[in-house]
Image 1: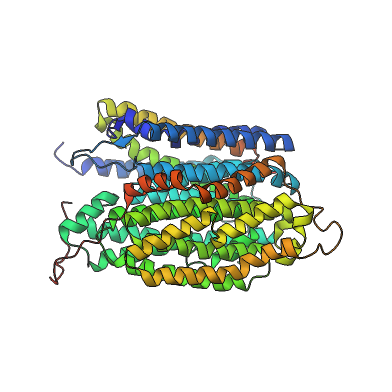
Image 2: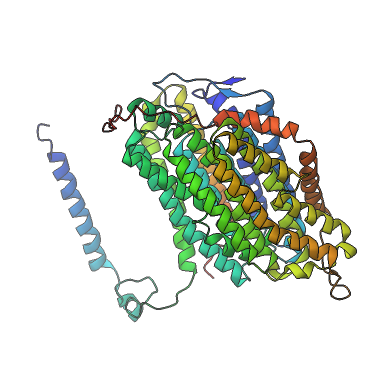
Length: 122
Length: 517
C-alpha cells in the first residue's frame, strides 16, 4: 500500500463508526425507565453539585489507593512486554522470572487486601 | 568469592540477604492475611519476623565469611546497582540486629497496649529491607528506592496506634515532611545526573574527576539538595523540626527503631554517596562541618529544656546525629572507622533506653518525667542499672562503648585538622551531662515518692533479653573495643572518602561536557 496514512484513516473511520453504533444502538434499543438518580450526569452515587467542604466516605480513598497500586502493575507490564522479545538469549528467562516474581508479590498483596476485607464495600 | 554481577546467578547470590528478607516478609503478609485477630496471632507474626531477620543475617554473614566482592565489569555493561563490600555487610548486620531487638521489645509492648495489629511486623520487615537496599545501594536510584521503601513503612509504623491522637499527628507530620524531603533528594539526584550523566556512584566520581566538575554549579546544587534529603532522615539541625514531635507521638518501640535503624541506614547511604560519588568535591566538607556544629549545639541545648524523658531522648538523638556528622566531616579512614563504631554504639544505647522507657510508661509514655524515675534503684535495681549504663554511654563516660566511639571521633577530627570541631564536640558533651546525669541522680539519690511508684513497670522476658544484650554490648565494647574497631576499620575502608583532590590550580572551571549520551 503506497498511502502510508490510509490505514490510519481506516482506523479513524472504524473507531468513529463503532462509537456511533454503540451509542446509537443503546439509544434506540435500550428500554428507558428513568429515575432521578439515573438522570444525574455522573451515575456514581455522588451528587455532582454541592459544597466542596463535604465529608465523604473514606472507602473511596481506599478504592482509589488500591486502584493505583494495581494500575502501576500495568504500567510496568507494558514496557516489559516491549523489551521481552528484543532481549533474546538467556536474558529472556531472567526477564520472565523477574516479572513472575513481581506479579507474585502483587498477588500476595491482592490476597491480603481481599482477606482483610478491603474490597468489600459494606 | 568474586561475584560477576552481570551474571544472573551471581547477582542473585549478591542479593541473597535481601531476597531472603523479601521472602520472609511476603510469607508473613500471607500469614497475617488469615491470622490477625488474637494475641496468639501477634506472637506467631513476631516469631516469623524474627526468624526471617535471623535468616537474612545468616545470609549476610555467609557473604561476609566468603569475602564476597563484585568483580570489575568492563565499561560497555552498566555498572552494578548494588555494592558488595564489608561496609554493606556491617550496615546490614546493624539494621537487621536493630530490627530483631525491636521485635523483642515490641513483643510485650503490643500486647500490653492491645495493639493487635500483626501487620506491625510486616512493616518492620519491609522497612528493614529498604534500609538494606539503602546501605548497599551503589546507584542513586537504588538508594532512593530503598529510602522510599523504608520511609513508607515507617510512616505507617509511626501511626500504628490508631486510637492515639498524638500518634496520628506524628504519622501525618512525618509523612508530609518526609515526602517533601524525598522531593529534595530526588531533585538532587536529577541535578547530579544532569551534571555528570550518571546515577551510579562510582561513575559520578569518575566523571567529576575526568571532566573537572568540582566547581560545577549544577553538581554543587545537586549535592546540597542531596544533603538536605539525607539531613532530614538523620534529623540533623536545621532539618530536625519533625523529630521531637514524631518521636514523641509514636509508640515507643517504633521510636527506638526510628531513632536507631532509620538513622543508621540514612547515615550509611550518606556516607557512601559522599565517599564514592563526591569524594573529589571538597565543598561537602564545609557543609557537613556546619551541619555538625549546629546539630550538636542545638540538639544538646534544647534537650536541656525538656521535661519528659521521651522528648529528652528525641533531642538527644538529634545531638548524636551531630557527633556522627563530625566523623563524616573528618573524611579520613580513621573517620570512617569512628563513624561505623559510633553508629553501632549509638544504636545499642538508644535502643535500650527507649526499651526501658517503654517498660516504665503507660499510654504512649509521653508523660514520664525525669522525676518519675525517683527511687527506681531501690525498687528495680537491674532496670535502674541498665538505664544508668545507657545514660552514661550516651554521655560518653569511660568504660562504655559511647566513650570509645566519641574518643575515636575526636581522634579522627583532630588528625584531619578539624580541631575546632573536636573542641565543640567536647563542649557539647559537657552540656549533655546536664540532662543525662539528672536521670541517674533521680534513680539513685532520690527516694521513691510513694509506695509502689514503680509497681506498673514491667519488662517482659524478651524485652529484658533485648535490653540485656544491648547493655552487655555497651559494657563489653567499652572495655574491649578491639574486635569491633577492627571490623569498623575494614568496613569503613571500603567506602572511605578519598582525600580531597586539589582541583587544577586556579584554572577557570570549564563548562561541563556531558560524556556520550
